[in-house]
Image (cartoon, rainbow, N blue to C red; front, top):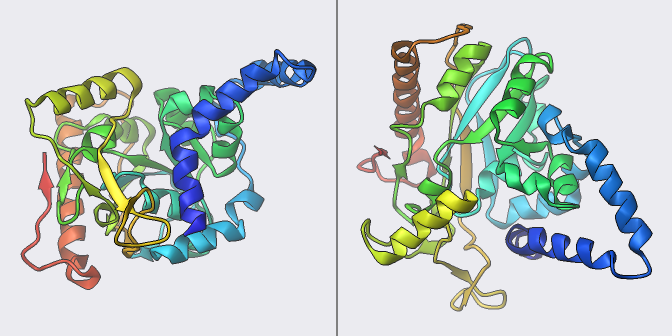
Length: 319
């Protein structure tokens, strides 16, 4: 529980805390340290867009194994991936904190490298996080990088082969729909990842995390309501939407808190869709592979849902 709680707190306040401390140091006797680090930031500013600086030591911290066991989280392999190809993994659903995405692809807690030998995972997150001192180093150490066009293109075209770029396709918009028993994906009009895959000849891999939406309860506001309008405004301004969610307390599962409920999360990596390299794909070509991707994702969900505690009548809704 401690391992999960520290990660939730880090996610919520580490950015602002690091920024405040960093600028505060300029007004203390330790200001030379701040100046040195600021100089380093200037020199190193573009590193997140060029593959980052991953640390196998950080990815293999014992802390992440405790994190895995709390829920627990497991990674399910269905097909082999060739180290001679590059891939874009579409991760679904977003959930509140993307616990499955982080544990499976930002750490080695579930054994990604042993299950997919020769494949290096790179988990994409908001580019703004990499403008924050110290936080950027922490994220890069796990193989996490900015979800920007330049950064993705670098990994898929200038970093050799065997790269797997993991994108949480639904993003902030999808997080507003997540709640227990709700299988709604924001995907119908999300086609940019397909176009990038075509331009780089990267195979598409659907990934579904069963249980991701079960670990928090959320108040879902209706479209057109004042609260939903506020959430949408935040989403447009800063890239993420403030969700009104509830977890369990630290000392009691019956009290309110920020700790997620201990519900199993099973992340299933589906069959890769072979994608040709087309420098300037037409809208029709993008649509064809987008439809193939959705069909493959729905098939993956239906094939594995009963195995991971879902009802046979449960279905995936794509909006």
